[in-house]
Length: 308
Image (cartoon, rainbow, N blue to C red):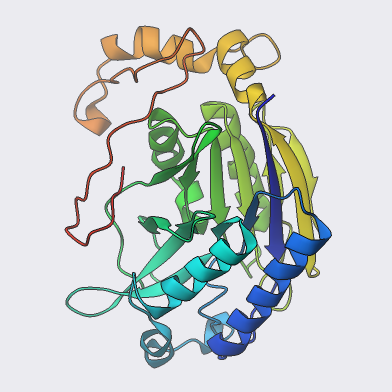
């Protein structure tokens, strides 16, 4: 069996104090390692380490003041934490300094060896509220011999193109750090389920706890079933994802009925898609599961970070 043991921190930062928030995060990751020695991957919410103030109190000065370089001192420290604990880390997102001014909202991923294996810049910031500049490149990373994981951030989930592209790139799990303090959390959960169903992958949609966010984090399986849903309080969410379920669903269909990837690959290339300027291009597939194969990593932004 291919299993991925996940611990997700539904937590709130210390508003305006990234240093204290980072120290608390480090302590909690070490405690997770001691408490659940079988955990492989630890996840934190969107903007957790940037420690923003409440939504209506965040200023441009505060955003720029909390921005960091990627790679830089923070990523080196987080890499050291991953190496110390032997864990894969997706420590939420940070404000990353952008070339020419401004910031990106960037999700980070680290290997147990301390390597920064992915840095994904949010493609769909929540406009007009969110101040970050949009990224242009989708991102996945591999846990070798086990799984390919795609990265999405909060509002990305409202755009089906994001989930479809990550699935096409071979993602079987999508980690979606989120910071939602507004009344539309129910819609986000519906979208998480819809993206899981349409693309036949797991979605780990992790929100901040109160008072920073409204919580209600979810883990959704490849058939759209909500495995875990939390309340609003601070909590460590644990689950073990059966990755063979992705293979089963893509090969035999959700509930033994709906082989979406197989049908799209078989029929989609014959259907004009003017909204996308062309037609669907079937992904490479394995031994019949219609699971996309890995694609080449490319440093498209010229920043030394390979992005798929």
